[in-house]
Length: 308
Length: 308
Image (cartoon, rainbow over all chains, first blue to last red; front, side, top):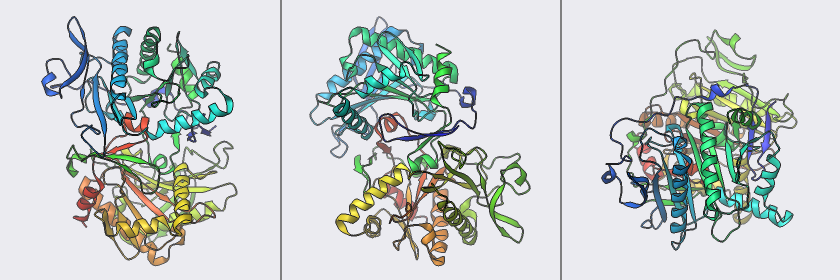
């Protein structure tokens, strides 16, 4: 039965519609394909990108590489859009996806995320560093070679502000972290997808997107940079697992993910929100800010669990 | 120069990025095409839709036709998703777009909107009737025959709530309508697109989408149902004009529009927000709720003005 649900955290509503009785294969899109032709992110074409900021190297050259976006949305040179906009190329291979890498190579991407957050956070005037990934054209990327981006801003992004406000409100009332409590609750629920030593993956109660999945560290940690070595390895493992399952179920679907970390000087619970983009946001969503999700998260979690 | 802008009304931020120097033709998508095959919205196939609720008829049968959505998101029968979900087929022709109709035929669509709002608003428990349109696959429709939809809900949609809160806050301070004041301000600005006798069309200061356009009645009117006969004709004329200009500039682009009317018992200023869907919402937008718009509204308005 269809159900209007309020998010556990935010004043955000979704309309879960079960009555179309969709199965996972109904959500399969035209597959994301590696584009042919000259790829500016491939080794040998480094001269086609802005100057390298930092890279991680292996025996055969760089494995993860970071540079400023060619057309930055924000820049230290833009007084009205102060910030940074960088690209993080996640691998030197052109035809692989992030989840195809061994956990150690995904760990390098995580290390690069941590490096950029640490470095950029120290810039005077920067309030937040948002790391995000667009995979596939429907998720907003034009370059198929796997990469993440970061946009740093002079203000805390609206959605993070809202999550932080909810976090604080709950904390002042319950003296506990709302994310820790959600994890505890969902650990035994039908929305659990999987867990490993340090991370927990579940489908949020008010999922906006079919097969939306959140990754939370089990330990209360505010920032990805606060994770221990072991926890970072667990995150690499968990990211690989959930992306593999999504890719298997939905045949390499377009997706976005983004990291929500503690704003400067604030307490928070770091997490990654993974959003497959297999449906469109339409007039109802734009006009109401209520999202229709045609795949109940309980069913989505069951499908993903069956593959793990 | 790029610029982070706050909306005049809401705590909503957009990042206007000019540095890609895009021209209108850079936003042209694969054209929305009429699909071939059996169309359930065409005359003769009425038996393929749910039962007709109401229609407007001319000498050759119905011209505008309304029925319940085949897979309703909300229904009077859904306790957890109480409401109505209806489809309004805007014409009996399969291969035309709304703006191709003569103003009198567009006026009939407006009359149908008014009829449905009036009727559904009287249902006990219904708090809001949201009318919206999805044109083209990228805007979320799977059926190309031109139609609008309405979803009625037991609660005022989040975005309308936010607009109403901003409206009230401004009114209590200034004793004036914020929409009237925005219209006054934009009437002489470079964001003006056009006006006719009763309606004004402009690109909002913090446009979320390239070529976003808002239609406002010049007179303070809370609901489309409050408009006079002449004003409804003006609205038909204005809707035709702006959709023609968008179609000419962007070659029949995918777009959404939605009507924001006064919630029951509230004062408000009715308007229509038209959102071309020629770019994708990506990870940054989902993770921050700040939208990057690569077409400054001042340039968008100038391009549209040149066609009017």
